[in-house]
Image (cartoon, rainbow, N blue to C red; front, side, top):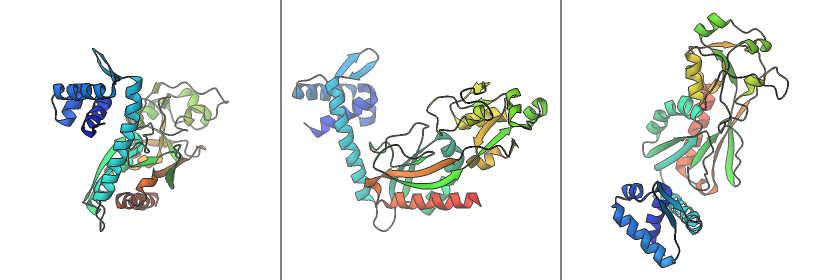
Length: 295
């Protein structure tokens, strides 16, 4: 199989169309189509179903794409490790974490990291679902739970808590809850069941209730920063992670003695990245910043 054709095939499989693949490869749509046709003829199997809305991989195409994706992922990792300077960290580092932690805690600190390591560039991938590190969807991850993928190096880096918050305007009109039972009379904002970034994210709906009888939420938002904005707008109360720090400063904390679950955070990466200087300096930076924030 020709490597150039496989590269084009991989781009088409990921993009779902000849046009979008051509844009990423800087090739015309017709050139991409010819390459795919030639590959199908050499293999004597169809790789795509063509239809008006785009392309769908055939069963044979799925089989080929799994192998091609893994090969290109390994090549990308090898290239990154080979081009990294022996004396200083360099190259691109793809970091994935949850939208809440990434947007409110990590993103504001990346300037400091990049000032310390100017030869490193960071791609920050915010996703409340876990990206596949083994398939090189990212180099490293900051997870709010123990890693579920096997064969990943993991390090526990922090334990976070929660703050139950409301806006001054909301609490002025709805009153300040004094006991957990008072939450029954308040509007609650919860995450909902959409790839929750933290397993205990909706604990407030069940606090002080019988198992299986959670409070009904006024609104569900599948984003912790979105929940924060809803609280600021005066919509209701929400439990928000305390790593949001300064973002919570304009809100009022209530029920401060309410027992809440803890959030255990982990830094994880594949075995192949063990000797990467970019990974080690980023890990050390995270640990130092988390320790500073906890003081």
